[in-house]
Length: 188
Image 1 (cartoon, rainbow, N blue to C red):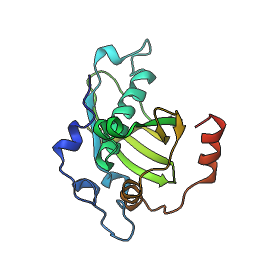
Image 2: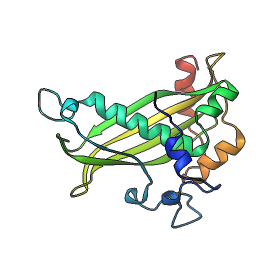
Image 3: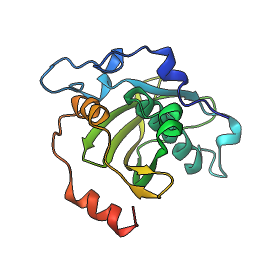
């Protein structure tokens, strides 16, 4: 089993986020450019990641972006301990992936992540995947996740302190009504 708090425990955080995510402009609360986003996942493409087209199969992009999501959320305090103690969880409502260049066996890559938007019950994450050699943009994903009560299986507001930390890492201080409607549509 994967310990989603591994990276969060490796990087002892203050109230302002991971060291690499500290903004150059304190008023913005997030890095100025995508290359300033903190690294949330590093990996190598193995032969078993390849499909019949000889490049990394889409299922592995999703899995690696998922790992990056859990690292970023753990930095906020949304980790296994929080979920267990509070009967809370996170669920993806929407994910869009854009593939920019192929990854092949032996390619090293990293994912840099940011919080794009925070509303009362949802967080929108952005992950950019780059080949390490040559810094070639490989893929990007945008994920909308909802905070939920795992017993009731219903969406619930993010705790104020946690929501405040998330907002401090983004330039958006307002929620998105569309996200709340999407939660209602799927019963969360």
